[in-house]
Amino acid sequence: MKGWEAGLTWVFFQSFILMIGGFVAPYIRKITPRAALLGTLAGVSITFISMRPALEMYQTPVIGLTCFAIIMVSWLGGFRYPKGIPAGLVAIGVGMLIAWCSNLVGLNYGGLSVKGVADAFTNFGFHVPIPAVNHVFSGFQYLGVILVTAVPFGIYDLVEAMDNVESAEAGGDPYPTTRVLTADGVVSLIGCLMGNPFINAVYIGHPGWKGMGGRIGYSAGVGIMVIVLSWFGVISLMLAIVPVVAISPILLYIGMLIGAQAFQTTPKAHAPAIILALTPHVAAWAKTMMDGALSVAGTGAVALGFDKLGNVGVLYPGLQTMGGGSILTGLILAAVGASVIDQKFVAASAFAFAGAVLTFFGFMHGEAVGIAVSPTLAIAYVIVAAFLYALSFYPSLAPALTKPSGEVLAPAE
Image (tube, rainbow, N blue to C red; front, side, top):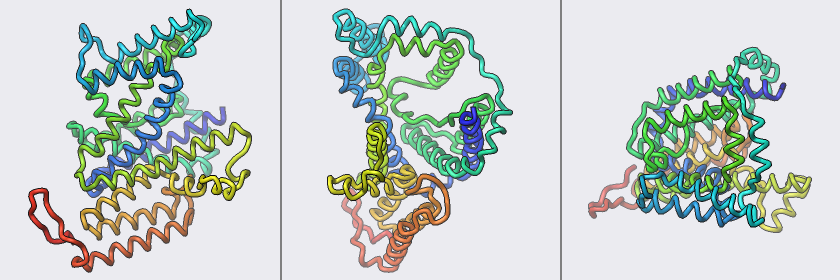
């Protein structure tokens, strides 16, 4: 109960960060290169959205790869199934068929069972959420601990929401940033007051859902279905009859589109900056996998020793530092990279200095806010910022830019 109450208070403060940030985000979007906004989003999609579904598919390839092929030929290849049946529904149906038929011959692909279905029926009922306002304020006793993580995670959520708005606009659907983020915060606030300890989000993957044919009715339909399935306890039954691996290809598809969009809707010259944005997310994902494996083994990186890990090529301190606050780190690195590519050295210097400030207070390269969290790394960013700013006074050192048409331009700065 205490943990739940602390979670409610955590979301309470994050909600206000989102609402306040909604008025700042439009200015950040205006000055930040699209390669940075979409590049760091692509990093999230490749590591924390695409990798697990891909691994699940290859753990149960008979279902996973078959369903992925069904989805790919429709959503990427344009093939239409008879009667206009959605490809996702076809994939889920085929996945269920393979899973349940495999049970009959003792193979049990998908891990489903009749007993699991019978047990799922015990969750049926009518479960209406009730206000939990008192519990929200009971969590205030942990305020000191909560704020250390709620503030940086609130900012991470803010940046990711802003990136998702940018992704939607790149996909042809512009939305007012302030209104979107304010609504995100308000809905999260209502949720925590009703007992939900999980922050809401402007969901990633707008181009993917749009590519599947989703429009405004899709969002409304999803919202209604989530309410119905939750209130009546149907989710357990769905998980008991549908193998998760049949759904995994849908998430992989979304990750593919988000990653591709970062390259397709930004200047070709900015491609290296997008790759730069991916690297912190790869580091964060690798550290997460490593920590999980070591935890199961009853040990940790510190207990094993960084030197021993380094001897086998595992640079754990590097993963820990680079992966901390990955969404902000990816954005800053890509913004610096894109600005350097455009020879806008003053802008590149400003982003590097912003990286120094964020690093000093733990928003980047750290797990929690504080003072002088990574001072050495912050100094490194300051040095980079000074170097880039100095270059702005020597435009003759930069080669001339050439337009695709062949027209030669003077250096940008």
